[in-house]
Length: 289
View 1 (spheres, rainbow, N blue to C red):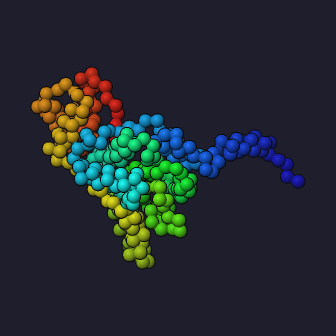
View 2 (tube, one colour):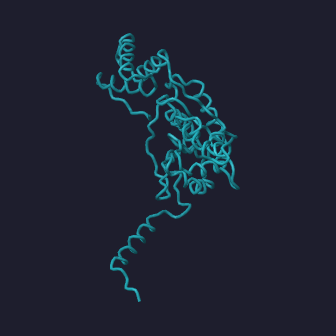
View 3 (tube, one colour):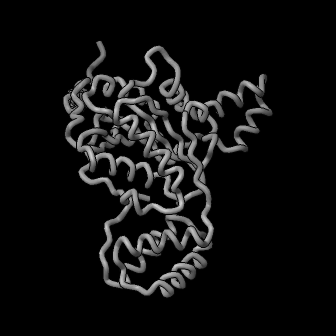
C-alpha cells in the first residue's frame, strides 16, 4: 500500500479553496457596470468603474470610420442587425479610442443599454465559454479585443472563427465583436508566405489564415495622417481642454514635437497635449491609447 504524501492534505485544502472561489456557471453580474474585463482564469467579469475614453466629438481625422462605426453600434444597441468590425491600420490613429468613445456616447445617452466587455487576445480560446454565459443575459454586449493578431503556431484564431461565423450555435444575437489590429489580415505576411511554401496544398493553408478577416462584416481602415490633420487633432484637444496658448505658438510647438518623435498620429498629438498641459499647470483626464 502506497503511503500518502505528507503534503497531500494541504494540497487538497488549497484545491478546495480555489474551487470554492470560482464563481458557479451563470453567476455573472452583468448589471454591476457598463464595462467589464473578462478574467478567463476565474471565469468572471471584472467590473470597470471608469472607462478611459475621449468624447466622440473631439476625435479628428477619422470622420468616415467614426460615423460608420457609430451607426453600426447604434443599430446593434437598438436590437437591429449589425456587423462585427475589424479596425485596422496605422499605429496610434485612434482605433481603440474610437471603440471606447462610441460605447461611451451610447451609454451617456441610454444608461445600461450596452455593456463593453474587453477580452485579451491570449484568452480567445475561452471565448465560447464567455459567449455561453452571455447568451441568456438581459443586456446587449459589445466584445472588444485590442491589438488582435496571431503568430506562427497559434491556434486560438480557430475559436474566434467559429464564433464570428459558423458552428451550430454561432454568435449570440445579443453579442457583437469589435477588434483592432495593425494588420488587415491578422497574420504577418512572412508567416503567410512561409506556410504557402511548406504546405502540401498551399492555397488551402493560406486561406485558413486570411479567411479570419473575412468573418468581419466591417473593415475600417486607419491611415497615417498628414500635417494638416495632425494640427487639427492638436487644436481640437487644446480647445476641448481650454489650454491657454496662442494658436501660432501651439502649431509651432506641436510640429516641433512631431519632428522629435519622427511621426504624426493621434497618439503623438495626445502625448504632445499631455506635455503641454503639464507645462501650463493644467490637469487632464487620461484617455485610452
